[in-house]
Amino acid sequence: MKIIFSLMLCLLFAGCSSPLQVMVKDEEGRPIQNAEVYAISLSITSEPHLTNKKGIAHVPLFIGQQARWISVAKEGYAGTFFDTPKTKKIEVALKQEAQ
Image 1 (cartoon, rainbow, N blue to C red):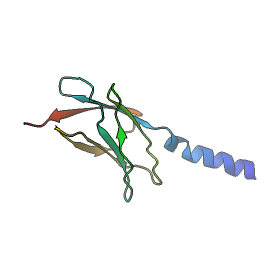
Image 2: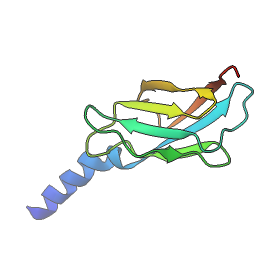
Image 3: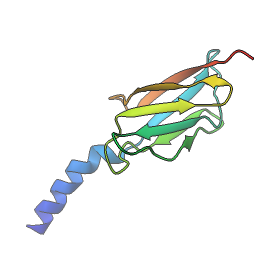
Image 4: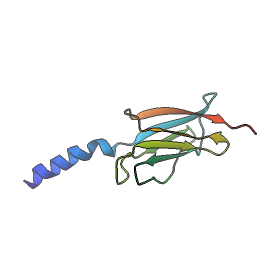
C-alpha cells in the first residue's frame, strides 16, 4: 500500500517538478543578462530567478502552489506579465524604455 501511495505522489507532482526555461531578449534579439523572472501563484511569489549571460533562467513552477503567472523585469526595460505557458520553454522580448 505504501508503494502505491508513493507512486501516486510521484505521478501527481511529476509535472510540477520540471522548471520552465525562460529566455529573455531585447527587441533586437540580444540576450538580457540579470533579468528577474518570477513565478506567481494566487498567494505566493517566488524569489527572483536571474537570467544568465545567454538570457536564460530556469523557473520552478511549483512554489508551494502551482504557479499561474510569470513576471519578467529588468531595469531600463518595460516589464511583462503573462499566464504560465503550457510549454517548458518560452522566449520573452523586453522593450527598452525611453531614456
